[in-house]
Amino acid sequence: MVRKVGQGMSNFLKVALFSLFIIGIYTLYSVKIIPPITPEAPPKEEASTEPVTVEELIALGEQVYNGKGACALCHSPVAGRAPLLENAAVIAEDRIKDKNYKGKAASAEEYLYESLAEPSAYVVPGFGLAGTSDTVSPMPAVQASAIGLSETEIKAVVAYLQHLSGVEVTVKPEGDGAAGGVKNK
Image (cartoon, rainbow, N blue to C red; front, side, top):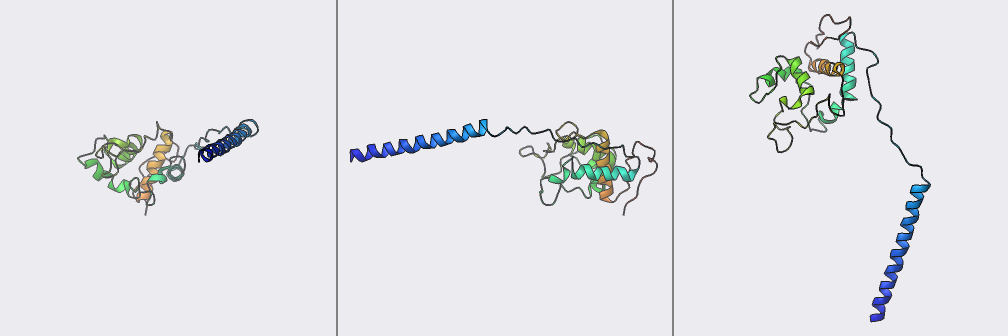
């Protein structure tokens, strides 16, 4: 019986040493033969030109919303991690009047802008950071975070949200086409 235990231990050591040898060969191969992968920084999406019409501002806003801003990742019926935004401009006035609102916005446009720049100014009930009683938003501030939206891009997203809500777009582009809002629906 003693011999079988010793023989079993001997077989275990042989298998363990063989396994370590094979792992060593694969490690050596991966370090010396396979070239290392150095990831490139993600490309910065910037507006090629400043939007000069309200329509261009809305189009840029939609592009940022679905692309660089990554808004659609959380603000969608599928993900459900953040409130839906298709009526954000319509309900903005009610949110400003809510007793839990801590921001400084006086209009729907200002509220939408503030929601992007300072997401914790108002946290929709049920969507706050866990353990904060809906006082801290899990959404990052879009200027300072990895999202890094420019002032123009933030205004464009606000214009897109107004357009999406079917209200008059009050955000004006900086260019020549700044006259007059666009009425939707």
